[in-house]
Image (cartoon, rainbow, N blue to C red; front, top):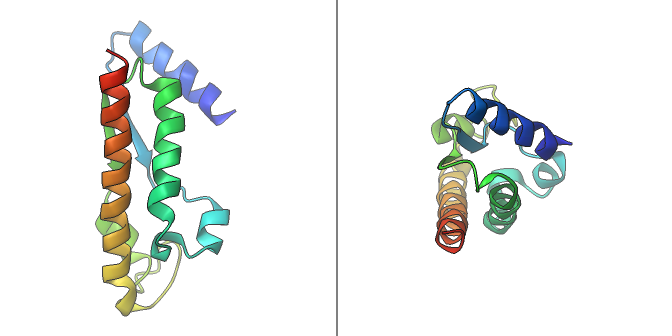
Length: 120
């Protein structure tokens, strides 16, 4: 249902001569991944890459610009006690979260670049 919504949104934007720019992550980590440790989970890069592939397959023929992560510093803030999601208060997690965000960004970028190469 979510992909159907964004399918229609992208089509509507294009009909209005607006070039879509999609953001893959903006504070919407599924609870299942949060239960595995969220951005502290080393495997999150693979889950994020899989997610990027699903979205790129569905929208990539019409979305030429992508952002992988919106405001990574705010994501980190949620782990170190700034009362943001997921609401943790452990300053020692900051580098683990930063590392995993960067790895997830890189993994998603490889997927998106591969999709762009294969779709031309």
